Length: 182
Image 1 (cartoon, rainbow, N blue to C red):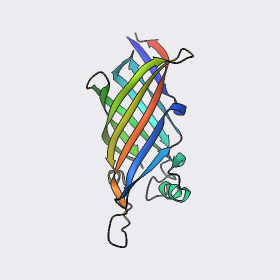
Image 2: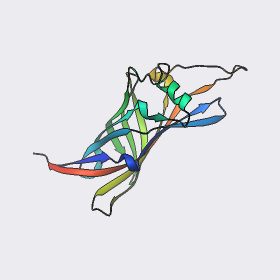
Image 3: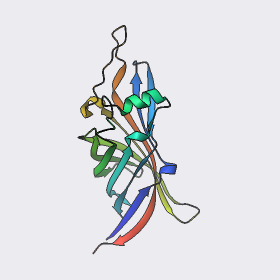
């Protein structure tokens, strides 16, 4: 059986999150530094074991003051938890393009099982002969499940920040190597 290694191409990928602000609009943030990949049996993605890490210090919401606050202890707690990780445990193929990715997200030292919806864009050869696979992954978490309990209220008693966080990842992976398992 052949094991194929795939590495994420960070220059053609993005990791974003979205959360409600004042319950009237959505704020988008992203991690500018991340790495990872997966191993699969050939191009059978249901056999994949994936691991992706994001550097908390690379967070960006296009607002330096907010970014600094997100790195503080009442949010991501950069000083004690400089990375977040996702490791897959099981991948279900729903049809030719759609999958459910079951895994564990670890953030702020808290590990929780989550499920991401994944869509395979395509597999193709680039102009340099490399094989690439593109995926879009989406899911939701409750920030309080990971110890992010920041809870400011507005002057009128409304909630300043939603609890649900949407995860959006668009990733391009490059096939690295194929090894024969004995």
